[in-house]
Length: 346
Image 1 (cartoon, rainbow, N blue to C red):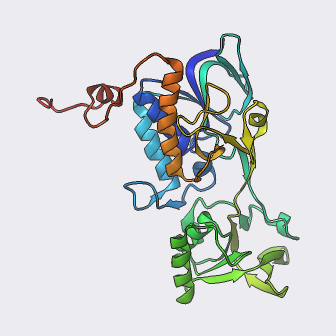
Image 2 (cartoon, rainbow, N blue to C red):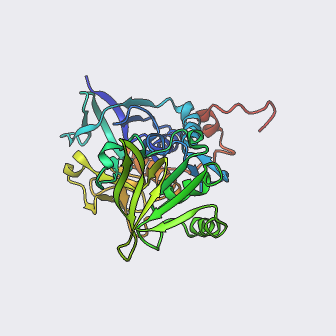
Image 3 (spheres, helix red, strand yellow):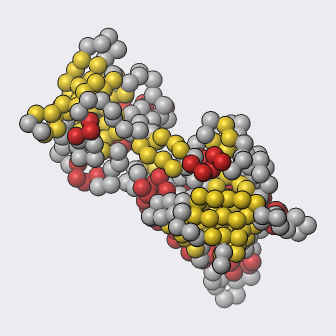
């Protein structure tokens, strides 16, 4: 028999996890489906030790720690997770509800769906230069899980976005040497991060190089480094023990692209009142959605999840008046959160 529920969240990354919390505050409980075998989405799978600097109240927090904190926060609402299974079918039934089926055959009868699938099915953009195939996931890596393993190593970081710059700033004083290689002079990372990196370069603590990877160097079957061509076409051999690639992810919406939603450049269009898609009852939050002024930040996903929760509540019961209640003072919220107030506290 299908699992009957009010909402299914597709995606167990930070936006999907915070969506559980916001729904829980409104007494709406969720089932969460994710194609990965563990909770955390891209943060947990690709960047578990990545430092994040723009989460309110945390000057810095690791990506996996953020996921752990979110899990702690949503514990009172007892969400049910269905991991290692992708959503393969989604159809509206005659009664207006949705029939949702996963790759393992799990079936749901749900009133609403919230897509928090990040970039959909994703994989890192890989180095394709000659010689790379022999060293991919050996000396050429696409994630950092144990930063302490890099101590005293000579490493190369490829990329010009936030992940590349964040790791450069985090590791420069922990490794023997660090070379940051980006194909352009301009960076996509936050200007403040670029400024800090430039200061490290000026002090000789980081080497900065602009160019394209032409070949992976090796000797007697052992990885040696990269051959990089500069803007003038001159090639340079840059030796290293390991290379870490942060060129972003190749997004693939998969079955999502076949659900009849308005899609713009592989992202799902939503309104900005309740983050509902073109299909009533289907909402989208986080990196998967797009709207005027969209910024791909975890912080933005949290905001979207809050408004989407109210959108779901209105969709489930359009005639019910909704009163905004504050977690600080509301006894109803305290009860839902399992907060025990001191005796005599009114």
